[in-house]
Length: 318
Image (cartoon, rainbow, N blue to C red; front, top):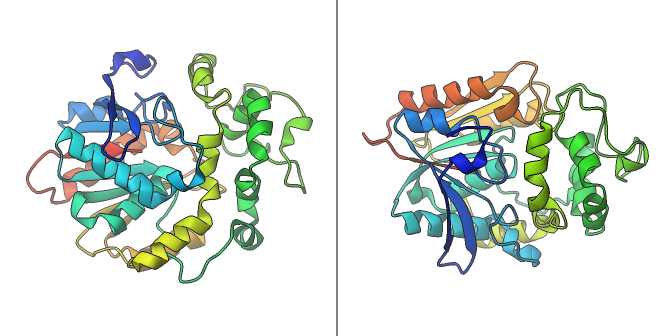
């Protein structure tokens, strides 16, 4: 398992009982984000399953926004666990993966052993619908989500893919945002591709990503277009707001991540009684790359410290 060579990992693909084709690794996925953690965790005796989430890599990319609600995504994850013959798993996620695994703990509490979130802290189901526009009004750092939620953003991002990546995958403090200052338009007009200094992707990694995202950004952006649908599903199911005190939970976040707000981190403790919080000073959003060793070891230490039913479970990572 060589983090620089995705083909050195065991890749599999299957048609799930939900009717969707999923790609996953049974121990680097085309989304490539977890490449530094898989081998150390496997070497500690964990079976690591890394699915390309819906809309990514070689997993199905449905056009319909409704396919991307967390309820539907969690149904796919249950079907994947059923396919590989695993009853319960440690669920680990970053960004939308973090939000999804937190909802997995609500939709399927009998299928999760422990919850590990990166960069996006737990937020409870809302009693009333809050639009993406309203969230951006309350928290100006979320203005990019309004742009992503607009269907017209898909084509613009696909037409400027490398310039888009050069702004998204950067170390903190670069001063280069996704949107033009004072507007909700992509900042591509300012320059095509930023200088490589500060980028988190090597040229090799960028080339590896390319075929999976060219002309295929609708799926990833659809996640931002599900707010109303997610609210309606959660409201209809009357999901609980608080996670069980018996569920071991860990949050790892970077102190320089503009999308991980300290008040939201603090509020998560109210709804996750067992939450352990680890902040990594000076790190931004892509914490499993920026602080790869710290993330790897923090997760191992956490798993070693909690009761995992006397077994080495599957660690399913999103």
